[in-house]
Image 1: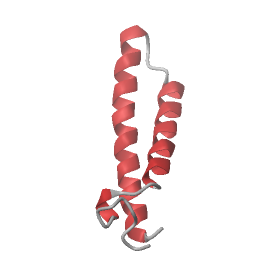
Image 2: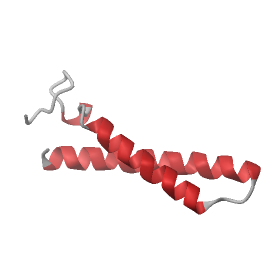
Image 3: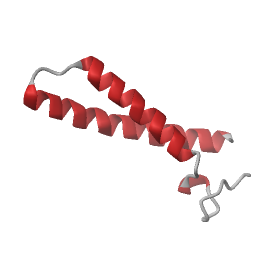
Amino acid sequence: MTKEWLKAAGVRAIKTGAQVAIGVIGATTLYSEVDWRVVGGTVVLSVITSLLTSLAGLPEVSKGDGTDANA
C-alpha cells in the first residue's frame, strides 16, 4: 500500500460513508426519529467495507487491469 493508494481508498471510503449516512438518515426519518447509533454503526460498516473492497484494486491507482500500479 502506497500513500497514493491510501489517499484514494480513504477518499472513496469517506464518500461512501457520507452517501450511506444520507440514505440512513433519510430512511429513519420516515419511520421515527433519527437513531444516531444506527446511523453511526451503518456508516462505520460501510467505510470498512469500502476499504476492504479497495484492496482488490482502485482504478485511480491501477494499471488498468485492476492491480496496483506500484506493486
